[in-house]
Length: 347
Image (cartoon, rainbow, N blue to C red; front, side, top):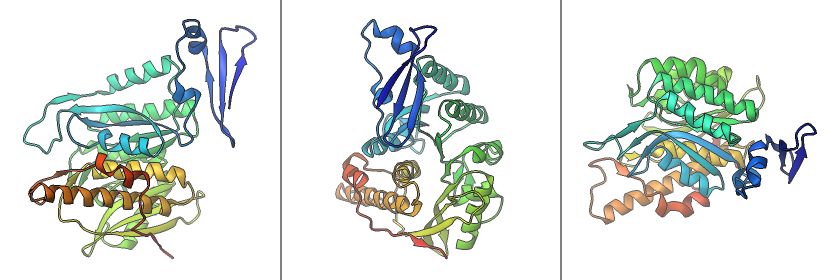
């Protein structure tokens, strides 16, 4: 439902109250819409008629060819019913794992200019912010300003952060980024999706058991986010996802694990896809993170299985290099996955 409210002092400045059946979604100044309505400019429908799921600002990397960063995240979220506005933190010709790549890197000043442009046109209302790979402290500091700006417009903003720093014991971002994530980003995040190595960096202790993984989640809860999903932990040769939801601050979190089969291949863009799916499903099941994780993992595994079969069908040995995921071909598995991987609740 949309209500137009007039300002008694100046009827050129109206306000728009967008409400859902249960609660207000946004209260917006409509000076821009009023000003340009005389020129018959169309409304921004994602604001005037918002989707039931939400409106996501996704700040991640982008490749012209292949599926990583926003190329892995935007399409799945759209399939799940979200309006998604992507900002490309980098734009490269292809994945950096290829022999060569070319492209551009967005800096913090350029990011803020984009935010200012959106704000100048009353386009900064978002229900979710999603961030992935960020390569510099200055850019990450600007992202923190973006979080603050978005929450000044929508205090209920959900910030889903994939703290991309490294894997398998190796950092692939500058060391100084770790402290910024730990001290500044974690406290303002709503959901955090690190891998095992990143969770160790954020907590400062080694994760060598399931109990360590659960304790890492509790440590991160205490620092800020109510939802933590360690997306991949290898314990004694078994690959796990460990999730934790602190439904009320200070209460014991609901914790669970999902056993994930190991696939003998390396894929690009899987972490970006996983976080996007967790955002998408956890918003649909806000009080059931384990259900959201089951759906996300089942979708991901279906995508990887199809990717592996297609490479083998093409006569390519999938163990020889990184594989580009078959995202478009897997849209049914993203939109309506069959749950083949069940969460096991911890006592």
